[in-house]
Amino acid sequence: MNAAGRREWIAKLLAEAGAPLSASAIAKQCAVSRQVVVGDIALLRAGGLGVLATPRGYVLETPATSPELYEGTVVCAHDGDGRMVEELYTVVDLGGAVLDVTVEHSVYGQICAQLHVFSRYDTDLFLEKIRESGARPLCDLTGGVHLHRIRCADEAAFRRIVEALQRRGILFTR
Image (cartoon, rainbow, N blue to C red):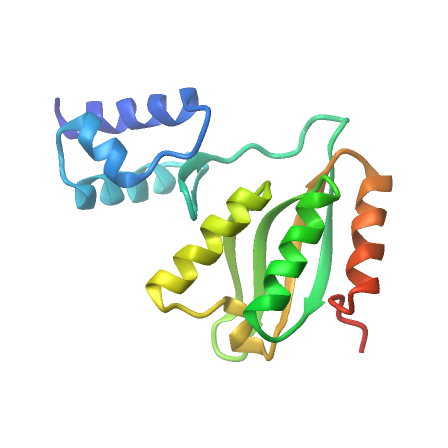
C-alpha cells in the first residue's frame, strides 16, 4: 500500500471506529511503524480531516450539530490531582462529557488539548496516563485556572453540572 492509500485507509478506519484507535493499533493494521501513523495523522489534519488525539487514541471530530446536544464552557480553578478527579467525575456523573481543556499561557497564548472524557472509566485512564508519564496537567501552568468545554443533553443538564461544580468550590469565581 502506498502512502496516499494508507492515509485513505486510516481515514476510513477512524470513520468506522466505534471507539478511539491508538497509533499502535492503526500501525499494526497498516503494517507500518507507530511513527509513520503519527506522521500520516499530521498530514490528514493538514488536509482538513478533523482528527483528534485523546488519551485513549485518535477519533474523528464530531461537532454538536444535533439539536438534542448542548455545549457550554466552564472556568475552573483548583490545585492538586484529587480536585481534578472530583471535577471530572462531577461532570460525567451528571451526564456531561469533558471535550477539552484550555489554558491561557503568558508566552504561548491559548493552549487547548482534547480530552474526550465521557465516563469515570475515561477519567481513570486519563489520570493513569498522567501518573505513568510523569506529565503535569495543563492547569499547572496557570495556577490551576482552566476552561472545559462540556457537552451534555440540554441546557438544564449543563446548569446542573455548573451548580455542582460551584458547590464543590471548583468553579473560578474571583
